[in-house]
Length: 503
Image 1 (cartoon, rainbow, N blue to C red):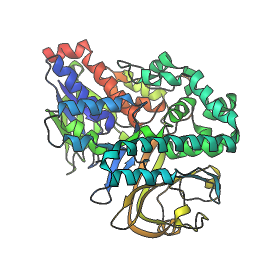
Image 2 (image 1 turned 30 degrees about the vertical axis):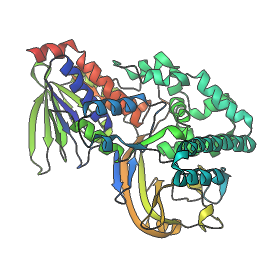
Image 3 (image 1 turned 120 degrees about the vertical axis):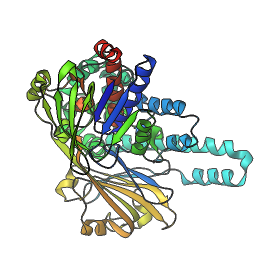
Image 4 (image 1 turned 180 degrees about the horizontal axis):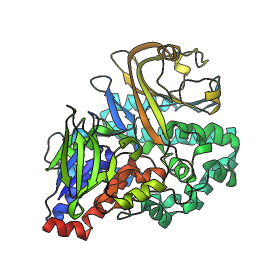
């Protein structure tokens, strides 16, 4: 069976990995081709090497081990498959980018409207002394580390209650409990779904995708101040979007990822990990810098795929199955002789996408810009309110990552709607030793409340599938990987495909 994947993101890498595995169990030989229009696999999972030891993720930066079971499972299954490979441990190694981030600030473009508490440094110092001096007391250092993190989380909650009142904190809990927050993991463990809208409806109220998040949060007693200064800065950080254009399903998945201790990233880069997942497939050809221009249904339900390679020369191949693994708005591919897919696509308006621009800087923040007494008093994570846009703040999120030992400074990731100018970088940093900027034109789909019927199924037509149909409901690394694995199951269970393959 010959399968074409158009786009080389994490959904494609996951789908191709599990499709190969499932078809092998049925003794069906699978030949996979991945068409990637750029030179890099990973889609919106890209990375940049800052130092010999530090790689910074761009785009999808983290996954949550508590509510992202698909990504966790991909890692486990890859480890099992490649357990005899000497490099496997390095490829699957993960870290928590928030481990040593002690402070949070919410900036409105002129001042901090919220400053979170810092970790208890005396506990950290005792812990370090125990680990460095007395190896026999290593277990005590571990206990203190756990104690420090939990105590810091408690201090944040207490600080939030004093600042915003207990009603808003309780309202968030009610929202999660009443609207099926506990069922999200069940959803991401359910495969073989042709229509994701129906799949969501099995586990949580479908009205969540039709109601604006701000309206439903207000219904549960969450104050406007808490929404504007706590929740909206989070959505601006994750999806570069304000809450007034955000549906409630996206809000539910956002609040579920609140425990920062379970946030992980692959040390070599998330995109690099998923590329290795695809490369582990025995019969998998990755065609980089190759854009698919036409997909035409021909004889026996097969598809002729026309692509243009790096040299500009066009070529055609025939496949049994085609899987679209990038936003249809970005692919700009013409589909011929597939009436049911044409009918579906003509009914659904093209989605608007939010561009995401990222700057990675090794340097020293300008404390005067943030109106702080010194560099040490600048919060390590700075999120912004919607008011910051009015006050001409150039960024959405300003976040410290790891320490750059060579230059004796932190490495920062700055997220914005437009690429930062030299003048803006100069205003944000008093010192810069490394600067790299990357733009995602199709960063995230605008997660607006959906009109009835405005959704695409995972299966567009016979042997034609669409991974990114899930993005109108949820746009994240987990959602893409889940959709990819779901489509692998759909293809493997299709009796028509199995019959054609046996012939």
